[in-house]
Length: 390
Image (cartoon, rainbow, N blue to C red; front, side, top):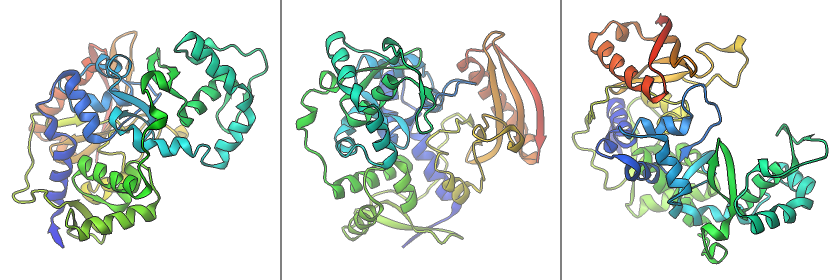
């Protein structure tokens, strides 16, 4: 079994997540990032630029949100579905998600939703078939809106649009003021019903390949959480088979019990930090590099959790707390909020290691990144609340 240090593990992770994209530009570069990372997670929260744009901003120097919108609506090079969570996915990966659609509903919650609203499925499909792409705002509901198993008080047609997307009958073709615009899948992916569905073991192997492609090194747990397309047993069996075939190798990181994996041809000689000129990055809570929280503990010794889902009284670091990456270490957390009327980026609190905050080279790199981040969020200036040094 190969043995590497924790520092080497960090460098491998950051090389795969950030540094190798340093020469990519524009829309083509944006698509390459999505293909390489397997998915870009979406989120509705917009206290600063939404998470999917934030993630791409940290990898493509000239990134603009229009690039992602065009890849979805114009080029049809990406599509929206459940990857790690609600995500933008590469178009070519579509076949691997078909099994999820064909087995819908997959659990009791989905079965209850479908049973409660299936009577309007034909109506929704017929309207889109006749009128073209529609969003939920185009559907009226004269009855009383109902609470639907934790989904909130929404009209049944909105729920049905979502369920038909999960089932594969509909596909999202654009976003209109953040609302999904749905069309018949056959208009976007012709003959999708006839496409060959990868078997369970092929989907498990796909999960392994995609995870190692995105992260360089990963535990079996990482693989099961990266994207979920096959049962854990199938993933375990596929890993063993790939190791025996010498396509995947086992790794051991110092002071850790977990078994890690990498591609057999991954060059582990002379692992070093491949700097790309971005010494500081302010990361989205849903960035692919930090979304697998256990990796942060194991590789970066960084205990992190997003606090927007807990009550204010339970928050330590703020509503939308963003990790701060300095070279190859996670050194703190920033709680930002954009005031779009005054074009001010409010840095409510910065939690930072005392030894890092006092370094001139960090201050210089942080100020440089902050100027980029202000502009990215549509602001012209910033206000600083407080700095907590630890």
